[in-house]
Image 1 (cartoon, rainbow, N blue to C red):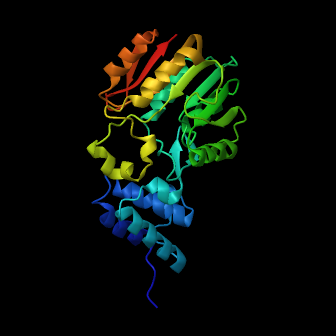
Image 2 (cartoon, helix red, strand yellow; image 1 turned 45 degrees about the vertical axis):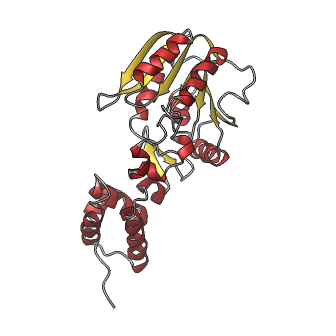
Image 3 (cartoon, rainbow, N blue to C red; image 1 turned 60 degrees about the vertical axis):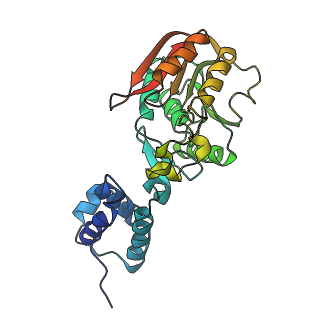
Length: 281
């Protein structure tokens, strides 16, 4: 009977297997093996001489094979960390990314801790933005909206798993199901990639839902809808904050100005690229 590999040898072999598909093959290997063994990175290092069971070795080999074929790590393990929260994700949702934490950070800076304000998260996906804001501002009421029923189910599950009680999930195409409701803040990470963009066929993006990514020939169709609707659903003095592509800052500022919003500013991400544009009514 062939001996199963130790943790150390399993990680070493998988790093080589993943080098062609990932910029972080070592991290990918650790996350996948941690998922299989129930150990965090510290425990994997501490126990690196331990042999995997036959079942663990088989499961790990299959995960590495699928990752080497391009399947995102988040889809393989079914979760991703965002704002220090472990959130469930699936092929029906975008994978939460660190750049979106810029939107959450800026939103929280504009939300007093002790005021019961109404927040609308449009296109919530996994619910990452809604849950992060609700957890940090328990006095606020957050409404999380998505047109995709499967994505909304993931968001609702994350709300339950994290244990926030101040989030409601509503199935809606943007504002369609909200009637005349008015909010103190509107936030969104909407589709903003242009049709035909070469990035749609590369990396993790190739495995994510196109309806959550693509927004017309210039990538601005959904942002136009959000800005237009915000004039009816945002209260006086309220904030609107939208994540967008690195080359769309000027266009989004112009859309907000044309809609009558003031105090427009664009916030850059950790790479120095324009990433979130905010304004006030």
